Image: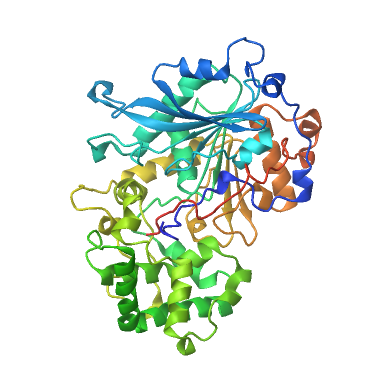
Length: 489
């Protein structure tokens, strides 16, 4: 993921509900618990403050509490084993946030797959069920990184085991139903958690989650780019991308000046030339990942006649020239490591570039320091895919019609139960339940309410009446689809 790639799996679709309508914003709100109104016990009459109950959990410590009306919001550290198979081999501190509503409400376990935000926010399922939210920073994203870092302990089973321990610890306080959710890499993470610990959650809502089952077979992406949007828009994008490689010499000179002014270096990729081409090769993917068809009028219509500055500006706005600098890559080393060892990474043919590309879509290995060993494990994603097809129960996958990451998606099979795959018309990597067509929106919302154990009687009788239980909050429910990134190759 970069801006695109980067953007990569990016997203956090879920930090909010983009496109929330007035109807959904005006949905009935669950009664606010008295404990929250008073701001004292905050635990339904137990007489013990919720913070004290949380901090009584062995290994849990408080970083800070931030006020937010109607909630208690905690930033926490939790002591985790570096290796869940050998807990005696050392520990590290994993960062967690907790948006506390009421222990009598359901809880949503949000995983972004990257760093965790330490500002209060609410995923779409949390708003739908009017519940609590636990958000977990993915292991090896700083500061949740063991020291020294044994990178062999960064894999999907270890990360799922992190979630399992957090869930087990907090379930004693939050006893009602739990749902797992996440967007992009977070949606993948929620899926892997369910695969390894299927008894923990009562449902899973995974947004725009890629599923690269066979890493060397990426023709689905090529077919996607042959048909996405309109020919006019594709031609504009292809033209700008091609022109950026035709004008490599003058634009790389500009890139060199840009990097010098910012203090950027290129040790990990190996050269400015490789980094420049990586940014350019991301351009078309990144556009469809983050933009809409209606944005195409911002792309130069005649790239050959555009100035160097216009080409630079368009590439930078969509792909981001800082992405493949050492400074741009450093934060995402854990992601590129996982892409090159287990998750896989898409490769696409871009025939409109002819022979202009020197490196093609570069592999994740090029974006991880050589001091970190990597070896790809082809069986890991096949195992997850097989499990989803045969055992996915109470799982909802939401994709965007025009999001490249949806070209290879999860598909629960005939042996799965109460599971769904839905697509937002014209949607990008920010696709969510609010953007679904009316029938799908109601069906998905009803399922989420049902899995959380809070579906009103009217919804149980008629799913078409399903709406979020909490009002839209412009601060809590904001969404930034570029908040995270997902490698695209």
